[in-house]
Length: 237
Ligand code: GLP
Image (cartoon, rainbow, N blue to C red):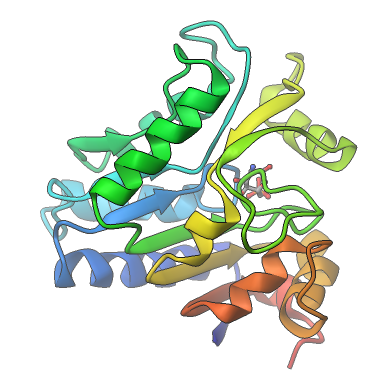
């Protein structure tokens, strides 16, 4: 595991963009698992800047959805795929996407997702945020390392942290997530962590026991790079 501590969100975004661009330059057909949430948004904006400036070409990469709410009508503003499309897929000029098909019933959507991920030989790079309760995607505690791609009910912690994204709109209570097994078998994992409110959960993820009660702890068994700002990393070293 590598931990890099950056001064603030802006420095973290620049470093994360360097990392992601490095992977894509090395292998243009990279398959990237893409978190939404607030943490990676500056990073994606920096990648967009580089694409627009002609410094980076993402057109051969495949973007893979990490998680999605269940039960939203087509075109609902809360769709996590919609967020991923606006923040990552379109601005970076990505042509190929693997996503959860919300027209299918959840079990079939998950089975198809797994088949498509297997069909591209798995994930090269997982870009992840850290849930306030240690979740990855929507692998809520308890989730062990073999937890499959599946539908689940969100915990009260996730409902309340996700409420910040949607203003007056309610947070859906059920979701689909790429499984722990998919995430942990990624060839590289980039975990982005910002803010003092993530300090305790980050310390537990990096220093505490590997436990289903903190799914992010299992990242230590992967080829992991953690980029954290000083606020999140204080007391870690
Ligand atoms: C959310 C999402 C995750 C995200 C995490 C952190 O609930 N399901 O994919 O990475 O929690 O979100 P944020 O970056 O907004 O703190």
